[in-house]
Image 1 (tube, rainbow, N blue to C red):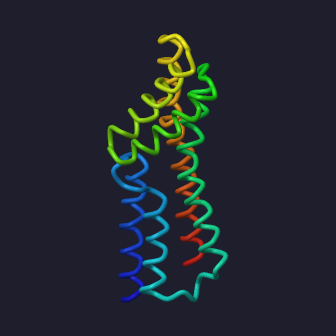
Image 2 (cartoon, rainbow, N blue to C red):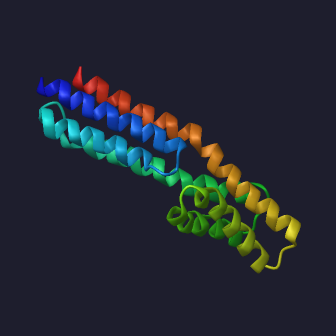
Length: 159
């Protein structure tokens, strides 16, 4: 019975985490990792060694880092300057405080403003901002894939 409760708790948190990847109101990968911790606290840590949790934490951090990387690379890909690259990353960070719209508008505004400050033309700066937004959207499939890997690894450890 305890194992069933632990499993139910973990899978609810997994679903919330997966939803958080698409709905920026919720933190995705950290909630999935929290689901694994919750399972272990309820059912026991016997099935998991420290390397499992370290590996899962690394995957969760990678998922979070992908947002920043793809946002900045999207801006650069569409011709953004180095300033736009940093503006997109800073805009994403600031956008976290204005969820959900801030996660799309923050990188766009950051890349555009920083590109304008680098003395670029408005059209090029807007293109750079659009690239930052595309980067966030482009990161979604990779983030989901990594989160599925996290959950699959967990499942294989408990069966």
